[in-house]
Length: 277
Image (cartoon, rainbow, N blue to C red; front, side, top):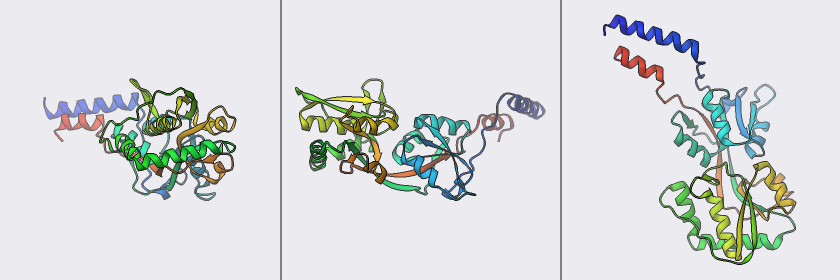
């Protein structure tokens, strides 16, 4: 093919792309300061939503776009309808690994701790869960769980004991890998599910995992519809007025996920093929 026809073919491709597809905007967020006046995805009921509402002044506030799941927020980011996503670092890493066109900024937005939630009047269960968490650490189970789900160094899982005790109802939201998510072969899995299984074994109780909207978990625990909430809950003073927190079992960072622009576009690949770039 002559160079003339290569160029003609490229121009034809450009005209077709221009007519058929809206170009996704380039990333405009490179630091926390760049969030001012940008559309930022947050999850309903999370601390990310709270931090977004408190960000900036009247002239530098960000525009929070609320989503029920992190997957929905990531899709909006990939499509270009929002500029960034504010979320926890562990799940952000999971989605960034699956999508090469995303990256996480090095600058940390906020640091926080995770804990389970128990009804205020259920002090006996709170004490038992805390003892189980201590035992998990002492026996190396805690490290094995985190190595499996975050380090990828093993396929460790807590085995369910055969028990006849009453059901331990644990509320979660299976939309937040690696802490809780759905697996085709094993159903709802994740770090919090392994912890729930260990706690149930320690108590000699059968385990029931109840999947619900994240924003409904605390109300469910408070109303007695669930005994324990495990869903990567960030410890906050506001939540602590409604329910009791277990001992912390993980630390986390709120980070900013953006489009990286590192993935080669279809246009660039065709251009390089036609023009030998």
